[in-house]
Image (tube, rainbow, N blue to C red; front, side, top):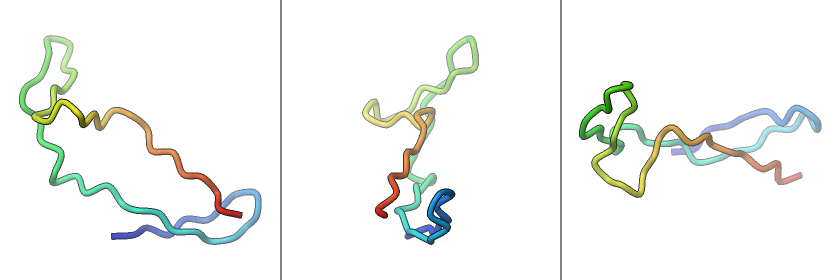
Length: 54
């Protein structure tokens, strides 16, 4: 799935892939409520960075 977003500086529209959250499974929570994910290569706490193609 793709998501359209507006580029702030150029006022143009671009598209990016959307994160499919149903594939991100939480295995357990730490004592500080930090989620531990079933797949150790996935960390949903990281930010998504979109790069303007213009």
